Image (cartoon, rainbow, N blue to C red; front, side):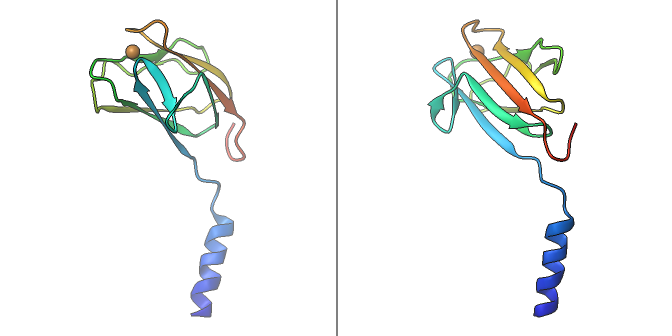
Length: 114
Ligand SMILES: [Cu+2]
């Protein structure tokens, strides 16, 4: 009983900080985080954002920021795409279908990452 407690304690101390996952949905051609529209979201290097399309039409989220260039491709309602932000700095996200959809990701320097 006590021994397993100490083993758990040692594991907890030895494990590096676990990267977090954020869920950002697309609804009414807006980015939503925890149910509210967002223009900027703060994460730590190594964290991942999961994009969920809650609109009955397509979105295509991409970034041409040099720091993290990616293109999630076209995805339809209910589909999920995710991206990990490895380097710290600011990353601008857009939707190729809806030019008004903009999201800035402020990637902070994580404790265990670059
Ligand atoms: Cu879109």
